[in-house]
Length: 167
Image 1 (cartoon, helix red, strand yellow):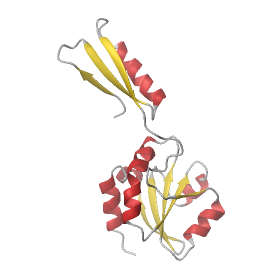
Image 2: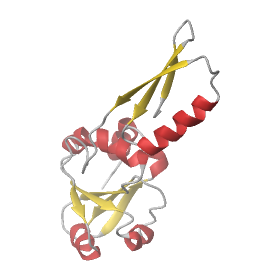
Image 3: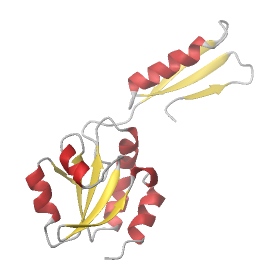
């Protein structure tokens, strides 16, 4: 949840935690909530900040793919690769960025790559990436597995998916 409204027992003070990760959306929600508050309520806004500049996950070693040729070179390699499709505007992608680093380390038998689906929409369409984030597993140019966005919300879901892959 981006914003949490906590009410003190006396209900005269409401703390609003605002995320700098999504400031415009946070501000919208705050304004919407504040319109419904009685006028005698005191609101204290506490902002917490997350480092997001160029974020690929704090421990991530994913290499970015920026061209179609680079993508095809990567997936046609003999090694097994995982390609994460994401976009800069996607909140679920930023959440995945926060937990994917340790998973990359655990599953280091794969080469990990990152594709912005808005930069390479034709690749996303060709490989049926309908939602993001999505993880696609490739070997010898062939897609072997696909973790769709609806099932990629937590570290456990991603780890279960990778454990279930038989190549």
